[in-house]
Image 1: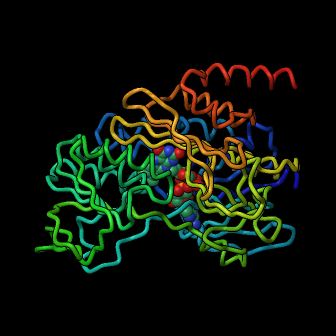
Image 2 (image 1 turned 90 degrees about the vertical axis):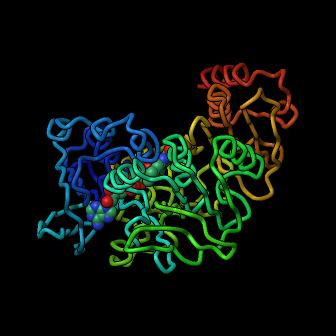
Length: 423
Ligand code: FAD
């Protein structure tokens, strides 16, 4: 791979944009073309379920870069066109065609195609008032309908569902969350954190029903009226489905690349052909944490991962072979509750609750005595300290973590100066 390669990035989301920008930051000399099927300049998704819905943030505020950035950096930005076909040459090169008939030749291909929301597969699940949320266009539709909605049913108690539930409740709607599992956030946070957040949502008027089995979305003349479950009907004039997103692997599969719940990539962000790169939400990779076992595969859906993974891909393109290691972190604002997570928890990790003040919640996870992850609600300073400690691989034994007299910020300071000294 060389600095003169012409690079085509498919997907102008968080990860694709980061690849293009970092290439130029690093002085890449070849052409950089970024093709995105959405017809709008690249934007951040996190506010779509929060500030954009409430109206505190307009679409302009979401832009990932200023309008004149792309020309100034000589990045060819193609919007409103989807890459539908790729024909390979040798050594990773090839030609891509878009649905508008444009052809882009490349020496190096980067797939940053993201994910697409899962739909509700029941009768009425495709009615007009049943929405999903991924794009700015989706968020625009949801925002418009939320203004008039009185009864909102959110299907799925995951991050996006709960963020929208909190927003809808703040806007004055009656909100019901229907979760199929035995608790909210079952896949992504510990039992203790889920309980803390469930209490927060209850206090804000959001009703949560777990083990819900949805049978049908009942409509009348095309309008949503209710969501029917095996336990009865819940009134609804708007339904938001937040039951996860499937990685977009179609192009990768058409190229014969290995996919397994995402485009399978190695520690250099290389797909199974050893030349195509793939980054962000569309990928699966080995647990990248320093204490990963090298066997567990993960698909990470976060801004932090998109950014860090893009950096790894760029290093690979530039011929530096630094493997991808990271301590991933994530945030989810659910009304006034700010959840922050660092590290990757696994079944069997020992959870320890750190005594905290009211409204705050801090839980750490130890594996073989080593702190490997933490979940924090309402305590950004402690979260920052934990991020530093985990990033520096600083030892934080269970008894230290659990001792409220030990200031995590102080420990983090020590960890920082130890890292500087070690350098
Ligand atoms: P995407 O951002 O999905 O970008 C992929 C792009 O590729 C899309 O624009 C798609 O249209 C395009 N594309 C796909 N196929 C083609 C093709 N063939 N040709 C051309 N273009 C194509 N993360 C956090 O860390 N914190 C949060 O609070 C948070 N909130 C979120 C709220 C919402 C509503 C959503 C949807 C996500 C949120 N996330 C959050 C997750 C975060 O936004 C994603 O992890 C991140 O955007 C992933 O970036 P990506 O580039 O991999 O994928």
